[in-house]
Amino acid sequence: MKKYKVIFHIDLNAFYASCEVAEDPSLKNIPIGIGPKSDRGILTTANYEARKYGVKSAMNLYEARKLCPQLKVIPTNFPLYEKYSGLFFDYLKTWTDQIEPASIDEGYLDMTDALNNKHPLDVAKRMQQDLMDAYHLPVSIGIAPNMFLAKMASDMKKPLGITVLRKRDVEKKLWPLPIEDLHGIGKKTVPNLKLLGIKTIGDLATFKDRSKLEAFLGNQTTGFMDKVHGHDERVVDPSRQESHQSIGNSKTYEGFLHEYQEMIQALESLTNRMIERMKDHELAAKTISVQVRDHDYTNHSKHHTFDYHTDHYYEIFEVVEHLFDQLYEEKPIHLLGVSAANLEVKERLFKQLNIFDTSKVEKKDDAIHALLHSINANYDKPILKQGISKKKQT
Image (tube, rainbow, N blue to C red; front, side, top):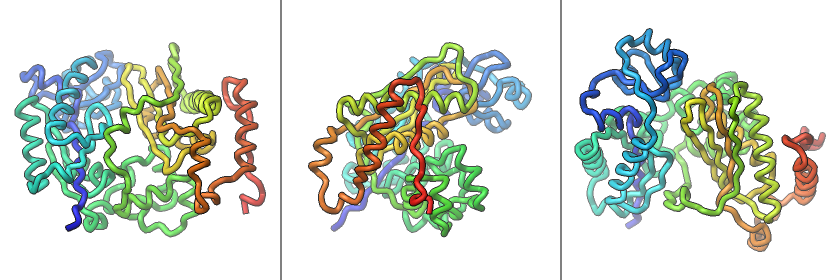
């Protein structure tokens, strides 16, 4: 009998605030904000008691105090969060070694073989109760046949929710959600999609004009369309976050970057240097990551994995820009970083190409990319970009 995949996505609720409550139970049921105590500071997060008053992450503390005068503000404590993150993942390992961390407070588990004939809901309830009893950590759990649906499911009920999302439920449960709730969609992309009349996930799933979508979603159009119809071919990969073979560049900005366009130009420069290093070693990458450190020294990162290896600047930078848009909170930036992983020597890749792959190789474009990179490598930011031929425009 065929074994159907069972993927859990487990997300710690209001993680930073929950860690503080776990350390000091007297804070339970008190509205808490995490961040600097200056009224001009920005909250990193808020617990659910504070959210009832309208307080939320990335909110100015002065505004948060107006909404909730009794708000207790606690400074960030990264060693504490790392401690509880370690306890969280150590507990998950008692169930399965098929775990892919997504960040400090969430992870994907392939539970297909670990269930041992137990019902997924019973196992999820046990996990949720164990984490609360042992560490006072509330979690929400999404259960689905693939990673995307599991992530969307865990977001549907917070805090302490357990949601099952099957492919047959997508049209009923997923499509009515606002487009902003679509995992992976950039904050800068949402307004553009709304200009097309796409207000819900269902609107995107049923949108017919592919060319208009590609204008905003680029080479991620197919991936998004597959996902909103319930399809995701990714597998939980414990090594994905542990790959030691990577190339990257980062830069700390002591005076901070304040303008969005400044940040994009900085990312262009970092991406260009990274790709030049890849070319020096004749490497191509599948996974691209972007790291951001806010003005309050909070680190955030996102990554994207292509279906193929590439070293093309414009292809990679399109992903870098999209990842940054997902991370950007309209706050000053202290550090930006770009890295490439899942690297492979290009010579090996060409040997692996078969007759069905040759249509993907455009030697003329490769030569143009190489020439532009060799020129741009001498400058802090790319000064030349490839144009679009009339043939491609028609």
